[in-house]
Image (cartoon, rainbow, N blue to C red; front, side, top):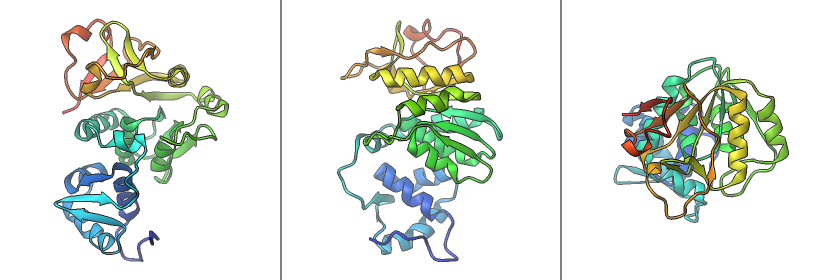
Amino acid sequence: MNRSKTPSGMSKYTDEIVRTVDMMGTVSVQELSQILGVSDQTIRRVTRPLAERGVLSKVHGALVSTKSALDPPFLSRMSLNRAAKMAIANEVAAVIQDGDSVAIDTGSTSAFIAQALRQRRDLIIVTNSAYVASTLAMIPGNNVSMAGTQLRDHDGASFDRSAFQVVERAQVDYCVLSASMIHATKGFLVHEQCEVDMATAMMNSAARSIMAVDATKFQPQDRKPALRQPQLVEGDILVTDASPPNAFHGVLEGLEIRVAG
């Protein structure tokens, strides 16, 4: 299939649209316009020739990737709670300003945050996520460091020795973290020790931490994570899409809680 660059005179948004649709599998025109910050009309105009060439499909107001349906877990997670993750991403982008330095972890919410940060300029980014790095590297004025050399096949994240070396040498204004679940007494939990270690390295390198989790993370999970993320400190930020239940007030005490609307 020909996925070459759009001929001269076509929209500069073509590559971003194709990448986003392939990443999410299926996305509505309205959602895509919000992600890219352009009008619905622009999305429809740019995607018409892409659909004609078979680069993507259009059905009932949505855009569908023509790549293999055997999506890896990362892409599957991107399709869950998309509206909430987009709202959270926009809220994080409101905290981070032009010229800030940010360490960003891997995960589906972090991917949406990377998309939202495309509106910012002159960012210094350190990340162990290939998706985050590729999303922000081509923005004029940005300085992006990809931490690591060996990428996991299911999410394009790196946790090798060189990844930790890059993060540990950084000094950034913020780090953006995620979690698999929030426990009312144990705090933010994840499944793998390497995720804990990377979060610790990013927090040690950052002046302030931002934890970005959607409201479903306050609910019990079928596959319960057992490892605690490093503890956030007073003044760190929690960004979510609904007010946390009362049972979690103790573990969230001292945090600045921002509810994305």
